[in-house]
Image (cartoon, rainbow, N blue to C red; front, side, top):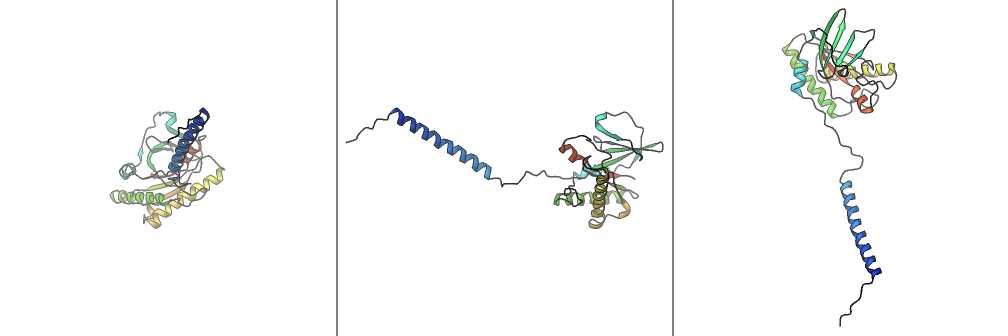
Length: 223
C-alpha cells in the first residue's frame, strides 16, 4: 500500500532553496571552468610584424629639399634645441630637418622592437625577427641605390632624467646598429646611430600607453 506523504509549505520551501543552490553551484562551477582554461599569468600578446612592402616603399624614398607648409599641430612634435630643428610628422612618417637655411624631409619607419626595462637587451624573438626583416630591406635598397645611408635613432619618453634617457636611447640605437651589422651583415658604412633621449617626444605629458610609443627606435633614410 502506498502512503502519500504530504509536502508541507516549509518542506516545499526547503526543496526550492536546495534546487536553487544546486543550479547556482552549477553556474559557478561553469564559470570557474571557463576561467581555468587560460593559464594563470598568461597575458594576451600582440603580434608585432613589419609590413615589408610598406617599409621598403618608405625607406626607398631618398631625402628631398622641401618648402615647409603649415601642418596641423596635433600631427607633429616641434622641439627647439641647439641642434637643427626637427619636426616629426607621425601621419606621414617623415622628419623635417631645418639647418643652415635648408629644409630636408627624411622618411623613416618605426621598428617594432622591444627592450627589457631600462636596458638595451632585446626583449623577445619578435624583436629579432623585425631586425632580420629590416636588414633584408636595407640590403635590397642599398643594392638598387648605391650610396644610400640610414640612421638608427633611439628615443625615450619624458619619464626619468635627461642624462639617463640620453644614455639609454644611445645604447638602444647602438644595440640595433650592432645587431644589423654583426648578426645580419649590413655593412657598417651604410648606417649611423644616434640617441636623442627625450628631446622629441610625441606625447610629452601622455599616459603610460602613450609614453610607451615614445620609447622607440627609428630607421631614417638620410641619403
